[in-house]
Image (tube, rainbow, N blue to C red; front, side, top):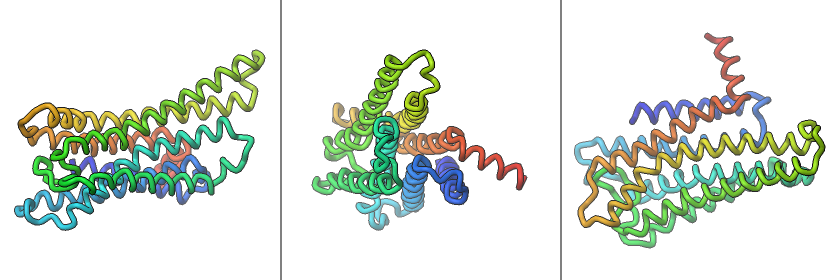
Length: 279
């Protein structure tokens, strides 16, 4: 999975570089995408660090800053999920509150990003208050949330994955309802009305967000199986299940970033132009 993580790292850097150095990509939508890529870079950096110490012969004794690394890994995973939530909030601003320019500014979106990180750090800190909440997981040879306290893995799944997913789906439903209301009020020339076109455009972006979030959620499925196994069985889950649960998260993150490149038209066009000129 090191190769897969390297691919994800490359795509994260690629997206950030394209968005920063191409003026046409300077939009609030791409700002939030850039922030997601930064979170992914932090995740991959922690993953590579864990792989390095996990492959050493003395991996069980030599795990520097294990608790801190486990906490930061939890923060990055939580932050990635809430990145989609704030992107959906942004789409809601552009659909329902487009007449109020304050909600559409860069400043508002920077505030969303700051609040998202604060929430992520607070959600991820809860295992600190439980004995063996964070620690070295032998099945993964990684520092992360342990299964010794059975409630903590379920708390992490609920707050880090399920809650933001429900939020995105709820906002998607609101925008879909908005489109239906506009369609019911306007004449057959509905496609020419700015409000309808704006709502449809934001709905399309939200559909893309749901696809990306679904990919990330699929990556959490083996971890959910691991949690239920640990809850209902007195025996320790097999090491293979720990290995699969971790690598599925890495794989889903890489697929998500790869798909993000090809879903973003401005980024894709910039990449195609660069390829034509330099290759």
